[in-house]
Image 1 (cartoon, rainbow, N blue to C red):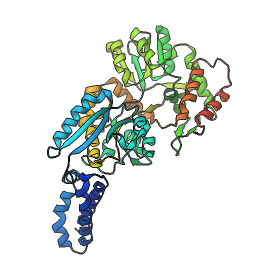
Image 2: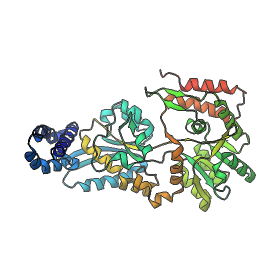
Image 3: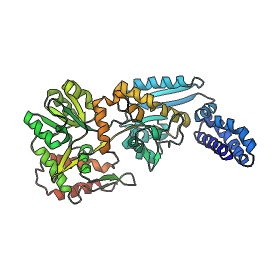
Image 4: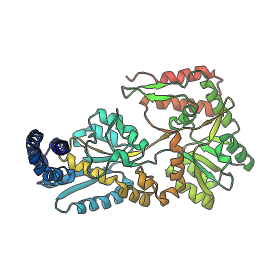
Length: 448
């Protein structure tokens, strides 16, 4: 009995300690409670009867939400940033959040900031940035290094690490520590296709798809001259690209023994003129016109494909492709949108509770229903409605072959140049090993 009560009292002290670090007048009560909890801990071991008498109070105090409310004496003022497209839903969720805590007075301001540009805006002045903000997962390293993300050290209403997909939790973590709350798990890519042209068996192989599309007089599109997409070939064949521990430079094996076979495979695939190197906007136009009957793209093109192909609209994981006669499964980058808390907030505890609310199962389900965005929450993602969505289902199937995007800035330009050269058939006739050596030299170059 002593051990159980002692553990409870220790938990109380830890919660009080976490709240004490939040800063601001709303956390004063929590700060003052910590010494009392410590004193109770010291007395618990030698006096079992006394410990038993204090157990009910300790259990009540160990509720982090109740403790947070009890420590709040002033208006809780918060600023939240969400994307322009997420303003209506976020407004609804904020109203629901405030209604859930009627005894607390809130003053919450909602601003518009794209997840793709959040890092750049925040890093101009971290202390002046929003208390709670959404961002793309590839920005997490720089945000952590800049001290712009509060570590998720307290679970108020659910365990973030166990209720979200493992890949999303990995994307929200740095050096094994969780720094953000997964919001969506749909910022990756897969294969859209017109099922009146391709069968389910056809789309298992890129070579077969090219054969079928050529016979139909149609095209397959992929943005090969984009590092985000050309990665799928080299990673799929076992050649790696990773971010170094310094958070800015890269390690790349795209010029290792046998990698020239991958480069040759890309040229072979594009040689027929059926697989074409094409950017996102051109894909949208040519899908609508009927020229493109399959493409590698993401959920943001789902509506375009669905409108063009109607009942024949389909999606699946990426196909295999052949490297020196061997079938290799195309890989991809997985992408997640996350919600972070600014450690400079005057109300860190409430910011963390709000971040939990904006990303819990119900909120992720609402986001899917309102905007078609794929949930990272396991329960939300397993719903019949999500499973029936072709794009989200394809993304989930591709997840087994996807990795979070973690690369330094020197990757993009050399990878783009490599893609352009290979997609155009290497017109200058550059030796492929030399071409890959030059590419890797650029990708791994020091950052000045």
